[in-house]
Amino acid sequence: MSTEARVSVLMQTDWVEVTPETPMRRAAALLVEGRAAAAAVVDDEGLLVGILSQKDCFRPALYASYYQEWKGNVAENMSRGAITCNAEDDLISVAEAFTNCPHRVFPVVEEGRVVGMLRRSDVLAALMDMG
Image (cartoon, rainbow, N blue to C red):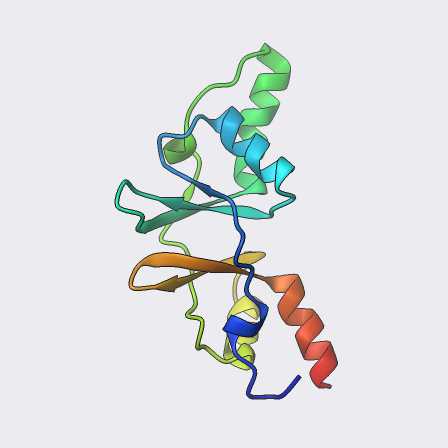
C-alpha cells in the first residue's frame, strides 16, 4: 500500500446505523449482530449526530442483566460530536488522529452524511503493510 493511501481504500461501506430514538436493546443487538465496534447515530435527515460504541452499551446491558429490563434509548447513551474523517483524508493523518483518542472507529462523512466507517484495526494493518 502506498504512503499516498486514502481513507476511501480502507473504509467499510456496510455499517451499523441507528437514530437517537432507537431503544438501547435494539442498538446493542445491532452492534453484536454486525460485529461492529460502533454505530453511526443519524438524525431524521440522515446527518451524523453522534456515535454509539460497544462501551456505551455496557451500562444499559449491566442494568438489564441485574433488573431483567432494558431502559433508555441511544440519545441517553451515545457520544455526541464524534471525531470524523473524510474519504479523501490520507491514512497517515488519520493514524495520527487515532493515536490521540480512544475511539476504535471514525465515521467517514461527506457533507455531514456518513459514507463509511473506518476501523482503527484496518489502519494499523495498512501501516504494517507500508513499513
